[in-house]
Length: 300
Figure 1 (cartoon, rainbow, N blue to C red):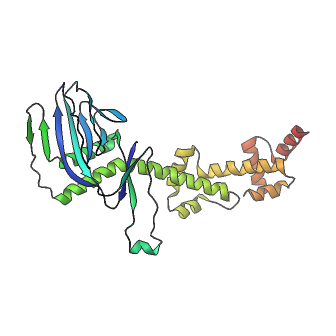
Figure 2 (tube, rainbow, N blue to C red):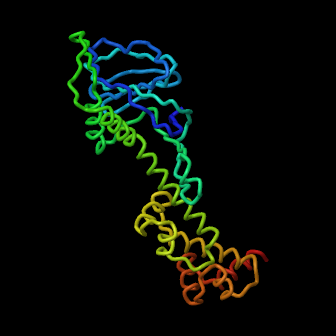
């Protein structure tokens, strides 16, 4: 299970965080934590962890979330000095595991109930992963802010860093920390989602007058954002896709029907005959009339 999906409200709640330094030859103890999630982030060195069915090797910038009520332990000893940050947090709400990211982008503001009832949503965060370089310094700063207890295997002593941060400050750090884990998946899904929506719209409305400006206004995005999202998923711009789709539809109609070429152009949204012929030839290498004649010969 690659994602933890928490039904909110309530939001997950930060309990305590700390720092732990392992010596070469040390290994993470075997333990079960009741009701509490344990997030482990490697700052330096390498840590080997397992909680069935996961077996992970964490290196700097990588994290793993241990779910409650199931045993976890180190799977191999540390071969070098290893520094980790850890966070304990919990939710009194429901949660479930899934293989894939669970998006929750539906807005309910148009419904009267929105004004008077709490609107549930799903916070989907990965169980393990690598924090990308641009976000790493920010995430580690939040971890330092939430470092309330530290332990070193070298000194065998616990220390309690002085913190003047209020509980509200700590919850704010924790929420922003979770956002760093969540946002990359949310943005990737948003790109896939809007590009899929636009493609489905073009597949259904290709015969109508459609412009990029109209699409941007309809879906409340900038034209450059729509082009970028669509191109990342389909390696083509929305308007290029629309043109290819119209030519494909026209080509099929030239084979399957006896409709006039001008009429076919109108039916696929290419209403100026000269433009239709020019674009058709550019895409297929022949004019619509030549295309029809070639396929008529093949059928005889």
